[in-house]
Length: 572
Image 1 (cartoon, one colour):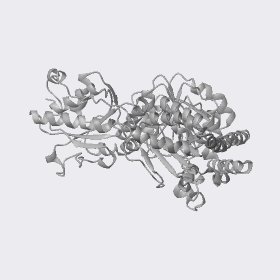
Image 2: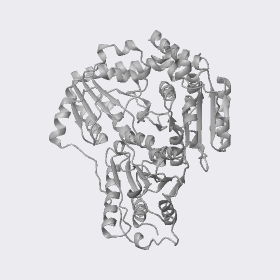
Image 3: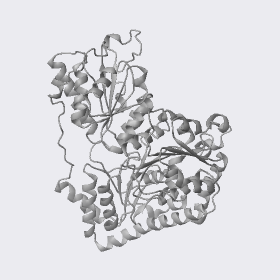
């Protein structure tokens, strides 16, 4: 007999629209799997490796912008969910985690696959609870319903985040009779939340508008953010009418406009040392920044006003400069600032235009110098990304791997059409689930080609992502194979250590070829820029999933990055 609370879980997910389920096989979780399958109406993705499964669910969550559920059997299987849950926590993704468990009397009693699962993820979840083990009784039914809805409220309330419900189950785990859904299908398990965006009252907004119109230098810094066209339109209008430059990485997913500064990470040190850059008012939105240069600038900056716009939740304030936490819908608030900019006095308008022009000129100069450098750059990871960035079709979603891959893409971001949504695991910035997240994105965007650009260590670490029934046909993966851990040769510090070759870089001799072919993907490789250019179109138009491996030399990569930075500085 299937416990009634398991029926409640499935019915709740159906009512709440949590229809994408990523599951891993196992006996203790069998009642949940059988219930979801036999109830019907769900897209159930079976994945053997729980760590990869959780990252695939994260990719589904990123792409669909909807809650996704995962569940697995008890014990060490549960612990494998940890990295993806942490990533979901820092990316504010509503991941529903259900973990089957042994009953409480089995814990710490030398029972197989029994670990302390209650609250096991509590540091990186917005809610954690354990369902009752009682199989009958109104109290257990009411309590389970309340836990499910409380978890949904926490997962989907801003800022969103993962939740964990532990499900202790006693044997028997496999029903001898068909599951009777009559009672649960006639019940109501989901409390539908009715939510509206938050706005500021007039007496709160008016003083902020007055401050805004009296400032002579305004700067908006946009951190990582999901694609949101309405926010992009509001920021574009604010930049145009308020003469406000918008600085940030390409991970902010904002559309191109004259005030958008994409290449701040390419600006050399002399630019950042200018006293004219100091903003009187600093606006910040979104999550973290990739650009080390921008982060260093913000650490030194002492704006008179620093407004962080975040509707819910306590904001990160790494530099201790926030003066006002604007708890309002960013689209609404930035639209109000854009409208108010019409009334800025002429004297301030001239100051704003001068400040605005400083950033625009720097962006223009960085694009020109970067383009000039790319004309004669040697074969390297840098040139690989430059070639592909020039050739991206618009009907594409891009996943940027961590370590050096995302940095190369950032330096070439001015070539990437702003219509292309960009995703990355920059919540925790780990390499461990990049390929799996890309597979999840491909499942979420079946109508788009998903291009994942990752390093060789990311691929090796996560190649279980390809251990699946079928790799999505719209997935394209570019692997930059520089024989392992090239970032340690490039970042300051480790690159000069005598232990670099043996202890930092892995010097791995592997290729992605065998793993690619084993899972039914088509394989391409490139060892020079001419072949990469010729094979690129064939790779992208391949009818099924494909992987392109670009082989480069780690020493040459480090030299090219150093030359790029020196060239920027010399031409500035």
